[in-house]
Length: 297
Image (tube, rainbow, N blue to C red; front, side):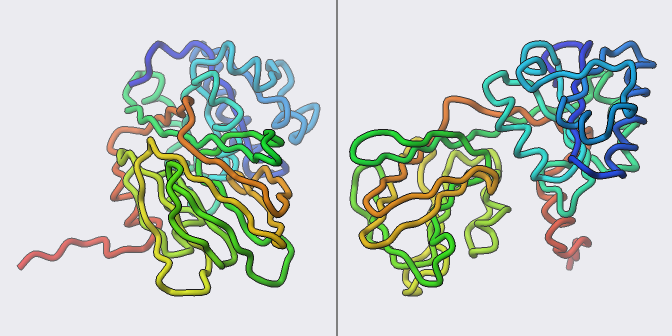
């Protein structure tokens, strides 16, 4: 359940999308009619245009983090990931309206947007905590990059047309030397993203685990494994191989031979709010086109 009555709601939308812009207008008017203060994220407002939200407050992510009781995100999982990373420190709960493709995290259908938001205002939503990863790149003993990720951290070959080599360690213990296109380190949230395409395991969100998934390994014996969420993974590029590190597919860093990518659970988490009747397994059946009808003997 939401922790408190919703008096201020922030709206965040996929940029440069006419369909999302129209949904934002409808939703902002709906909320205002119910006495809710509406904040429009500044990038969203700029993409819609100066006349899109005349009379509404435009706010930065920092301002949203300070004053919003909830953030409603319209778009796909990419929009949700970006919003989650920007609001992780402020712990503003997120609600997703799917106007993208699969939408593993944006679980409200567009035609159910207004009834679902009505349920949200009435407090009839359930909350779920999703943990994030914290990652840093260490070069010559010094941190040269640091960020967080909700889905995954991926070390890959970048623009190179060949495989790279890296040393893989878990909690300081040598695991193996990997020769592959790269490595994916994913949260349960990210287990249905890039890691799924690399034959990684699907982790129910309540699982306190991290998936370590080799990306096109040279030997088939390198299999995905799941480790404790309290563990740390170190990926060290072996000369002469350079690589590129991606964080949720949104931020990236060009790594050099000898760089070490250190990945562990972040102290921050994200709260997702789900409408009544939400089921993780029903979501998987729908998105992955599993059999929808149970057959009994």
